[in-house]
Amino acid sequence: ETGVTQSPTHLIKTRGQQVTLRCSSQSGHNTVSWYQQALGQGPQFIFQYYREEENGRGNFPPRFSGLQFPNYSSELNVNALELDDSALYLCASSPGLASNNEQFFGPGTRLTVL
Amino acid sequence: KNEVEQSPQNLTAQEGEFITINCSYSVGISALHWLQQHPGGGIVSLFMLSSGKKKHGRLIATINIQEKHSSLHITASHPRDSAVYICAPPRGGGSQGNLIFGKGTKLSVKP
Image (tube, rainbow over all chains, first blue to last red; front, top):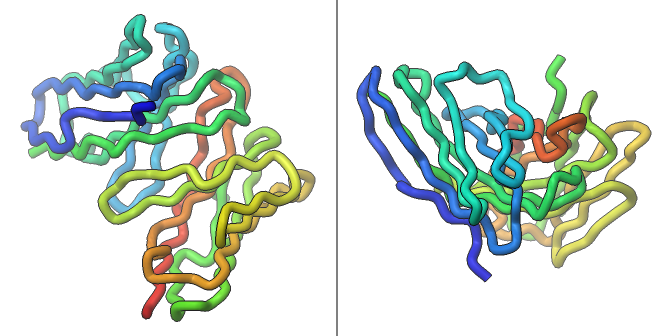
């Protein structure tokens, strides 16, 4: 059974650029959640995808968008990058929407915006 | 007031000591996750609790749903337990998987 993987592990971009981060969910999981973790802070919920549809969104602007594919892998896209977007981006997969489902986290993508 | 409060924020212990980390929350539905984050950033799910107590090896987690309080205990602590421990209740509603993270408790266990 393959765990949650994310790519790339590290990324450096400049202000105004666009970035795409990728997440492969654990086998059998149809739900992917994305979180942003700024340095020294706890993760903040960006959005969640369930069976290819967005199912809830946190307090992030529209330039943060996502996709989920038929194999339940997911992408996070960020347009018009700002310095404050520098953070660790984590995805987590789970076998469904129930609140008592365990979430399995990937290793994260560390994004630096210069 | 933060939705999730953890205490202490930082904790230094000697190897072998019994550790307790507390979590109080004001939101979320009737479940709570305990997570461990190592310096490299990776997060590991330790427990998902909806009632009572769970035990995995040297880790014990308890929850009181009515009081919205949970504790994580580590028995016979070891330097490899050094990490940030985070409690996270799901917000519930339409995004049941939306976790609200506490700021975490940074644990350092000295040999």
